[in-house]
Image 1 (cartoon, rainbow, N blue to C red):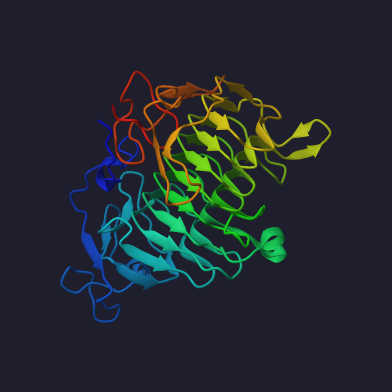
Image 2 (cartoon, rainbow, N blue to C red):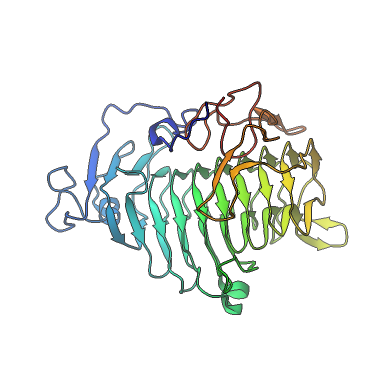
Length: 389
């Protein structure tokens, strides 16, 4: 029997990355009924904003800030207090997507601290404004997990927005970022029919720095790429994402400014009904590419991407699946059901790990978008959801 479970935040934690139990960790609280003046962060006297919690000088590595349901006005800024490799500082919505942060301009949530984890929020952008991002981080080792990010710069098409400013639902400008199990949709301009406009500068998930992971995300109806890697991105792991109906394409691997994107793994993803499937881009002259020869693209399902399914400059693709993913109900928007049906060719078609030639072996997260264990059959399924028999 097929199970439709919703994301269980506690089970989706990257236990292989951050498992330390911190005996001295403290719980703090933020609420719509709280006060940044009179509150002390306790359950009885909560603060009003995450920004104040960060600046309070109370936080220590390993602490958790619980945010009550309600609608808050951004921006929130976590610039001051970092966690540590053994003890992240965690900001968590007490109810999944119940703490709603709405932006006006700039980034809705801007992080500059290191070893920060952001779990379970609903981040809502603004249709206008410049360089607006849902979640933007410059900190290293940021974990962005189980959030719903939508509505960034999603007003009518604008030449200015699409060619000069830009933004992203989740914008990773710090190294070693982990983007796990997020629902990222409707970011960037749309046309009169509500479809994502072709727009090079507003993406779903956007990596600018090396060492990141994007796994188990569902990214759709964004006007740029579902997942973009550019600037100094390299050594990224992009696996088990479900991506469809984006304005420019599904996944792009590239770099700029003289950098080379190499040793990147793109495996077990579903790319469906976008203009472009998976591509490598960026050149510095004839025969001088911004992508390296160690990028690997294995066991991806690519279907009905109109311009190309896969277009590589230097990397190597293997075991590509060219068939309809057979979602339970495909609509191209949030009204659909993007679990796999029982006859989907994505079932048992994936890898549990992959090896980059001359580099390293990468193991993939053993939980899906909903916290279901992988694999349920003989092998990992493709995309964000594991089929439950």
